[in-house]
Length: 126
Image (cartoon, rainbow, N blue to C red; front, side):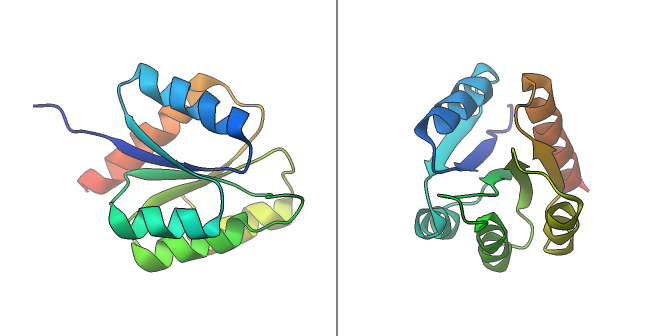
């Protein structure tokens, strides 16, 4: 029996959430969404996710790293990926320091998302 893959996407833009749902849905992954830190924390406390995609900026503020820290605090084994249109060397370094598996730039290709999920699943098998 195939493993049910659960993904959480945290972004304040509905269009981005819908894009992720469509992309991940193609592979029959279960997708939950959150639009802020509180919703993301509640989702992470309620369920375990194989991977969480987190936008870096919310309404112009870089709170994605705060969301990353919160989720890793709830479940350190959850693999997280920071997604941003505002990539910098510093935020990438900070994301990895706070436990992100990776950091990808918008816009991204569907294949990059699938690669992230595959990497997260491979890490949990170890």
